[in-house]
Image (cartoon, rainbow, N blue to C red; front, top):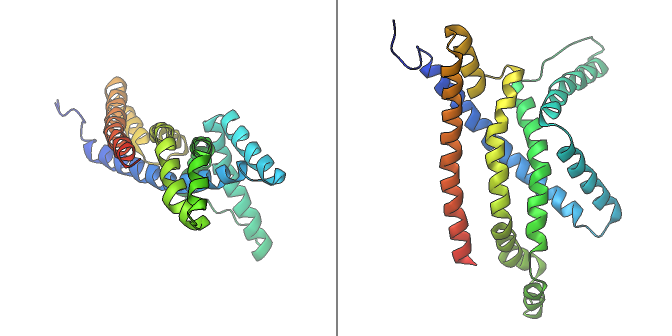
Length: 229
């Protein structure tokens, strides 16, 4: 009987951890960009832009994350089928890669929450600092670069950090799409060995380790942001 804690599944689980981290990082980049864009819409002087931004965040925060993931997975396949049928005239079914669907779905989710975090940072900027910068003759771009972005970053960082930690755990939803990330690998190992408690405990420990490491990084970033303010 093997006494290996991973029962030969250690390498596969390590690959799953790597894919989880890659998925989370790709989502972070796309989601932050989307969140910033939506936050700008919500702060716009144009009513139509504010309505679009408010509708987006309301829908995202009011819809289960799993449902959004499933809609992105099946919806992308249907959309691609209709496009290929339209342009080729042939009834072709092409499956969009699961990683692409997963990153898109999680980015849409993350962007909805990040938008509110960034908007909170925007609202925290003292108007006096902006007026003082304008009085010194700084251009709008210089004000954005030197004053607004550092202050938004400082005020929004704690909330964005929480969004990021939630994102790491939300990658487990993609196991339902058979994406070979951490949760999927641990499930396969559990099914193969019938050691369900062991491998789900392994998954929990790894997620906890990932979030713990990121908490330390976030604390460092917050400390650096406070020192620069």
